[in-house]
Image (cartoon, rainbow over all chains, first blue to last red; front, side, top):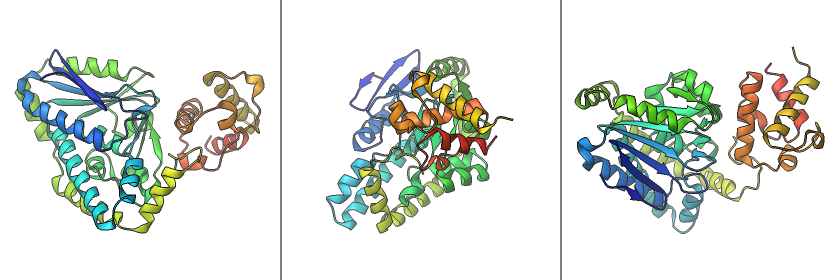
Length: 267
Length: 80
């Protein structure tokens, strides 16, 4: 698997561990450019075979792991189209990102998200597609989508339900609040807490441990204990598209994009 | 148990230390966004440090409309 240097992300392979670095300012917002490069990544991992045992996904940007979907791009593009075309565009994006995250979720390698700072919306969905989340103590996790009249659309709800108790899922989703890494660890979302700035180092040490075990056994164990909720993931796309046609969504997006509020990320 | 004044003082000390602003330049009724020169992401960082320092959870929606240290202290106080 060759190393890759892209506009939004890059990856390197060393000692059968791939490190996927997210580096699109300001905070790795997931738009069409990132999606395209993530698709290349998913394809590269598929073709890598036994050359890769583990993947670490991390951000090299100070604000955090990923602030979510690129709402500015989404708003700008929907303004240029009629409703039907906008919805078709949204559906296409969702289908594509689901394919990528499903591939990551099911990949025959152990995947680790090394999280610092903001891990919101689509960023949290990316982390949830990984097998392990290692977070530094300053990380915060959030699904703010209800503020925009939407639900998480990149597979977040089925994956969150898979991993956490329903009460915690409801508390996070229905209030749109962010939770700190300590609470996320107590809830079972984060498998290890790191000191500030140390998540990547601990992810590397965890990957080194994982690669000691027999590859086939690891893949079999992962497949057995980590079901992919395909039916619910499909259902999530349908619900998202249905909600997207409502006027409240455009209004929510417009408010976010035009906001001069000191706290636009807050509910 | 801390009084509101103690809580306020601890917040001001934390803010001064973390955002490298002289403590004497901060007062309870200051707008912390303007005084500390922080953006929304740094505000979330401050929220995390406050939660850790006081051993509480402070949902973000409790911060809505809160811009001064004294009001922030009262939000925290109600969770101690």
